[in-house]
Length: 146
Image 1 (cartoon, one colour):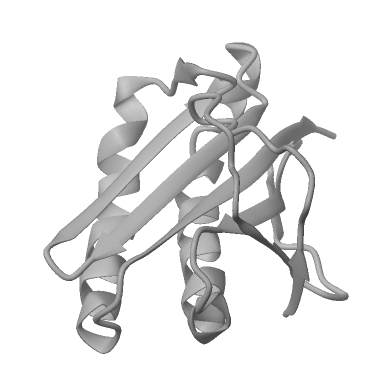
Image 2 (image 1 turned 180 degrees about the vertical axis):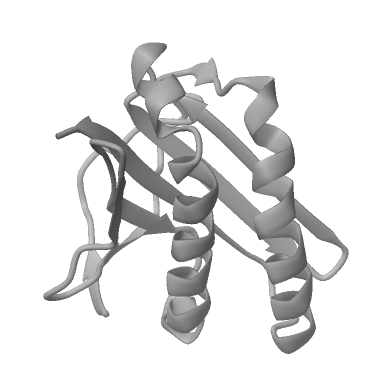
């Protein structure tokens, strides 16, 4: 995984806030993507809100795969609803685990939230015990019809 510092204005796909002071991750030489029933889900970007982000690279990749698995089950519905650019922001602190998801300021369908809970919460709770510091990351996925 290659770490790239970004010095330009980037706005959140989840809710439009400015992602200032973030580090941009690039999964060098590989795409994280999954295809099913003529729908392709591809991870486009990961923005990390932490100076110590390099320590979390393995966790970031595991979280990306978990989100991808949850979203893939709803790819067709997301595309049909015009929600083709999906953002998921994950925040972890010693006493807090939360995530927020959306598409260009619009919330994702409520039916998706249990699937997201099922994959994210156990993974984040497990990883929380390994890392005691606070960090956040935003994952940006595209739903593509192939």
